[in-house]
Image 1 (cartoon, rainbow, N blue to C red):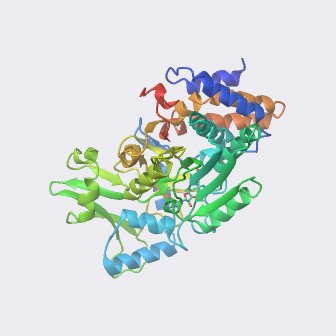
Image 2 (cartoon, rainbow, N blue to C red):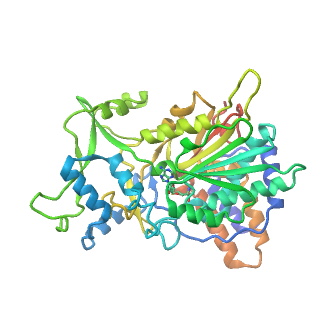
Image 3 (tube, rainbow, N blue to C red):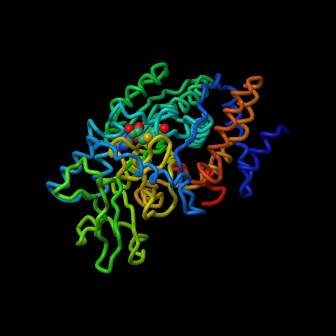
Length: 467
Ligand code: SAH
């Protein structure tokens, strides 16, 4: 066996992993035999991540470096926020995040001038690091479709598709499988994307896809289907949704608000930087009481705890549950669906995971508002609470375990073999693959949660949490 195989195995096997069921491996192998020539991928650094073992950011010095640079000019969003704070007082961190990321013209994801993804951009995500990521997701979705009795019509939904790489990889696998069926699958694609300029990139990417594509402003605009099996994927979507920040005090939950650090006498171009700061609201409010107590897990936190809560994530997760759940009537039953949510985060809440990203580094949350990505870890338990009365939810489990259980090594082996002779390319493929399952960074810091109308046990979630 070659050296790379052992090196990869040592990364995957951080704990004993039982073998994947024969059915999944067969499906993986069948698919890989059929796959067309793989697209090229870049070998780049992913977003820096939080290491819970050492309690540190991989590049924690970044925010200090950034803040010691020359004071950056006021950004258009920063100006709006400073004016807003001056007029009506501090705003919630959720509103701040929404302003920065989703302001219709100036928001980070809305402005084509912001170089978001890739080598020249601010961060790179798993689908752009290795095509195997999307292929493994496709295999899981197809395994659920197969378990549901192979319904002839499929709806593929992605929340926040970015550059469209993941959906392209998933579609390639589904199309390949579909062509081998006696009756090709009817496939429709639904993309939920608020950014018009990202929609254009996605549209160009999907222009050759042999399927109809529809864009939606919100998941609310997609209705449950009576005849299609719905497959949903959300990768690095929930971490971009606004979070409120609360602190538990003797009097109850109080909200951490965003306020100005600039004195009334100074103008916005003064040397004071960052120009914004967190302040604790003096009173408990309806919002802090409702959301601070919206889970029994939060109620039991001790006084002094900080808590990041995303009511938007809760609402959207519930919508996901409604979209995928089976609908039974006395005379018919819809085929239901399945989904994967993959993101930074764990099965618990976080207090201070919010951070910014610029040029592949972590930056202060108040650094160049609207020109940096903002993110917060996902509380998967909250997403589960939002939908588990509607549909069975599985996991979350680490990305490392999920991918390795889905046949990651087999696929990598095939991909390397098919590119033998091109050393630079095989090196790139290998490095990308290793990065996705790296137990210190991406492999452990990203979690995968499954949703499926099929009753358990659902591979690979049943491996560590038998239903
Ligand atoms: N899934 C992609 C991109 C992640 S970046 C990848 O992994 O590469 C987040 C994506 O979500 C962007 O496409 C952004 O425009 C979109 N987005 C952020 N907030 C959104 C919202 N509220 N509704 C719909 N899309 C949103």
